[in-house]
Length: 352
Image (cartoon, rainbow, N blue to C red; front, side, top):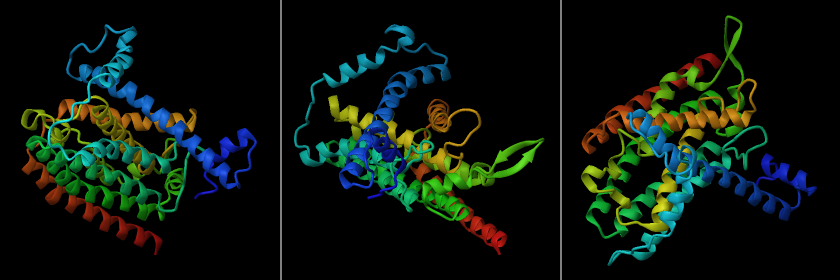
């Protein structure tokens, strides 16, 4: 257990408690995790239920929700009540343990990833030396949840969606990790706070304006590769094959309703926010930025990535499954290996 985690320590100081005591570490860590989870769930409610409709309508020149309260904001509690009050329908012959656990696995794997994300100065739940590896590891657990949902539903369309999800995640998770590894080579550490700190240095001065050494500027090729691979990981166009409604109804989530559907929907959007948080941390300088508080900059960067995924959802046509696999294994994998080797050579020459 990390005794020097900043956010729990702040809570302990506010309460006048000694952070060195075990029970204080446990209680303050749970409290800090609760605050982070509440913020993320609130963002999901606003951007997932209301914002998604508004953004998609703006991109496609349509009118979104505007009848429920000011700007349609009351659609958020209306949808919550509607979905949670529906009957939970359990199909016949489902594999009940796996079917019940899949939504929890999908939603919780994304929430666990935020444990090591530095939201701002002293706003980080934990800061282990293997932080980036931890994020990739827990985020990948969602693939198991998608396969569980597809297999356990006793539905051929769901099963096909689960298989597609695993095939897609395998094809794009390797390029995602390899591209992240190129950032680790630059930073010399897997620790998230160290990666952010290394980007606070000035890369170049343009007309007296200091340009920070964000890794998106240092290695834009890796940044673009990571953005594309992240789209595949969160299932946004052109990589939304696992839940393609024109082919397989809704894929792995076809047989889910009520609170189980809410958990899957929640997991989908929290994974999008986690992808944005990782990109903001390892490529966009984390919470660094002028004038505004660091935590504001962090959320602006994370929401910018979310807006990019919604633009892709509205603007880019879906690939066929064979095209998707070819792009992943024959394109992204080769390019990510090339980027990793080139990065290693450049860093080796510079440090020689």
